[in-house]
Each structure stands twice: as C-alpha cells, then as structure tokens.
Image 1 (cartoon, rainbow, N blue to C red):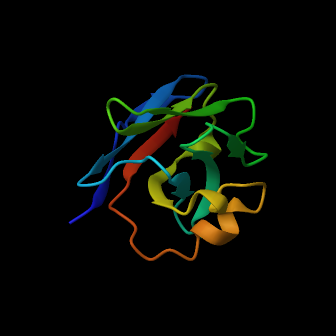
Image 2 (image 1 turned 90 degrees about the vertical axis):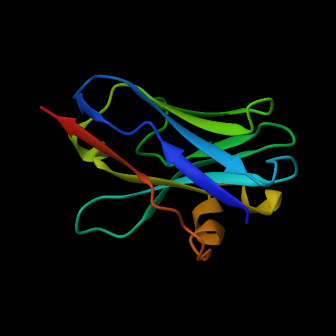
Length: 129
C-alpha cells in the first residue's frame, strides 16, 4: 500500500528552525505534486505550500513565504519542509500529501489538495516563546 510518512516535528523556540520530512513508500514522487498542510488546535487544516516533482516549481501560503522552503530529494524519495524564523502561530500538526502535478500550479493549490482524503498522521510542531 502506497503511503506517506511525515517526521521531524519537535518543540522549538520562536525564531528557531526545523526541517520536516515527507517520505514516500511503495511509490515514487516522480510525476506528482506534493503539498504540505498544517492544522493548528481548534482550526481547520490549511495549505502551507506545494512542489511539483517534475520542474521543482513551488508555491507558498503568504503566511510562510520567505520563511519556509519546500524541496525534493528524488534519490531519497523524500520531500522536505525547511522552516526558519518560526513563530508561535506556526504551532500545528503538519501533513503532506501527493497527487496530480497540476494541483500544484498556483496559489489555488490548497483548494485541490484539501479535497484529498488519504491524510497521514502528520508530525507535530510546537513553537514556544
């Protein structure tokens, strides 16, 4: 069964950095769009950003632009979310998902990925003051 596993979440102080991983098993990211979402306590899941495996194009939510970077390592079959200058409001469970590459084609990527149902357990990020 194809699945994605998120990891790397931790407790970090505001202003710090963290790198999350999204590892694929039983399939490769080639030909996919991969998105990161997050869900803070009491809030709905929201898009953080996405990457297209074919050309490496990325799109980000305004709230993380300039602080977060999504990258892909095809050799490791893993997508990374590098998070810098973390803020208290970045506290959330972070999830990844993968689907059609054209889902990641612009600022409306979250509309497409949000419709997916096969979300994993996520990885928890807690930013403290």
